[in-house]
Image 1 (cartoon, one colour):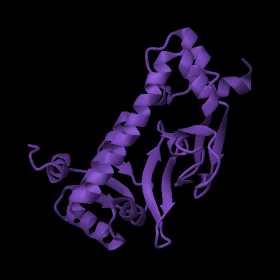
Image 2: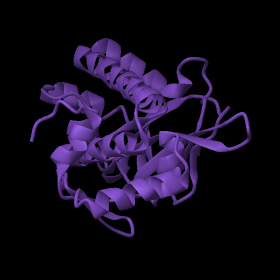
Image 3: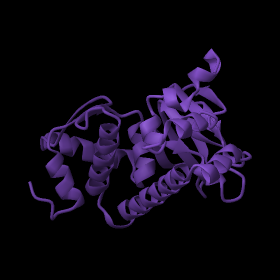
Length: 239
């Protein structure tokens, strides 16, 4: 394996435990090194893909943050999700071979390009990979269902609390602090995702800060009382 290949090998990637199945044999891991065709950098505000683009690959995020958006009936861009390092983008394109949304970088990013035909071929040979892909797709479905629950039955404070707790959990899974992190997205983008106006997001943030539940300094957030946020989302949660 030459130097260029080594740089894009899954076995050398510090994100592999998040986006690849665990417990693979050495031979299976080497075979998965065929999975990544290349790496691609997307600068802040750049597009990884656009709605209507032909679907050919999935994208494993190595560094950075993305948002996915669709064009709403009134012409506004509606945020449908936020994706971070260790997560996979592009599943929306499987259904009809074209992407159904825009994927836009919220900061300078790097992704691994996974040709879907290669992924399918290797999945037939490495059962653990096939099972893992199914689990990742299932996770996306569950996440979408969670968003529907947020939008359908929760108040503004409850929606924002659920959003912050979800971010904290995802940061923790990547070895970062679950109580202190930087919001890569704007409050307006958070509002679009949660179905709230910018002013409502700002009021809820201020209320949480006044009550000592969080501390906010520009985009830096520190969760002071995670139990209080959890009680908002699920009143039965005890301290």
